[in-house]
Length: 153
Image 1 (tube, rainbow, N blue to C red):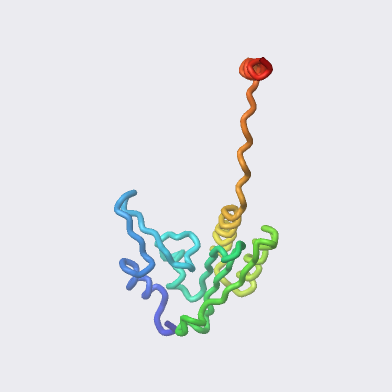
Image 2 (cartoon, rainbow, N blue to C red):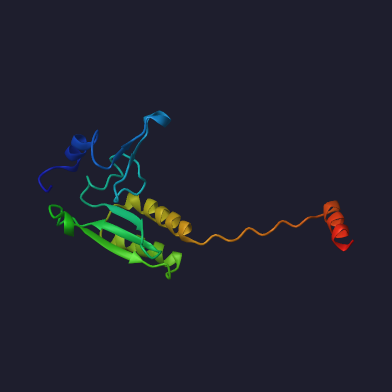
């Protein structure tokens, strides 16, 4: 799509594309399933398939986070147009977030999406944590005394 502007592409595919999810409930809200869409909102700002440079954050297979970036030079070759970097679950959250910011900033990707990329990576990492067991509630006050009397007698 080197000869076509991204604005023109957006106007052509805005109402109907394979990533669009329309809901009649909730005021007719529209979502996107685009893997390069950080917020899953159907809007020009976040749609990754329209822009030349875009960022996507997905969960990795064995835990961790995968950063997908679009290569500007191979837009006409879909199979090789995406570059993927994975941070495993053994890396600290701080290293993961810093890696995302550095890899997008040094490559000249959109600065307005850096905060959203880190927020999405944070949400993915938080969802991958194992949940703690809820401790059993201790009885206090009069109920505790009554329960202790019942057990002792």
